[in-house]
Image (cartoon, rainbow, N blue to C red):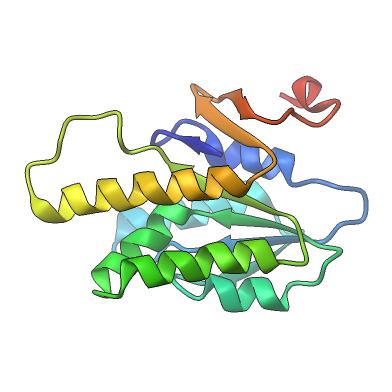
Length: 173
């Protein structure tokens, strides 16, 4: 699920991650560095409700996915903040991305990944921002290549880029 900031990606992803009797696991990659981010995290938690198992994993997504049972459904929100955390840690981005992709492929549970599309804006004026944009674009392409369903989100509306929406999903919107 890709889209711009505040496009409605997370809300649509939460609606997509439903299933009769399937435990829902939420992998949160955000870190609360300031009051604004703390408020955003609290709002997301309130919107989700209490029937989710939440895992705080700024970078440890692979370990969490390996521990989630196959009968669960997972929402990873989001790959963009995960990549930000990798870059800020000055880690080996290619190796970390390869590890994330391997963990997604090996997951016993289905995973919905939320990620920002950051390539539609102007070319950033500094090397770090350009590197982030480039890495994010490649990561989104790699995740989409392996996914069965890829949605673009704009103004809260899903646009099917690959695959097809589950039966009845249109009516849930």
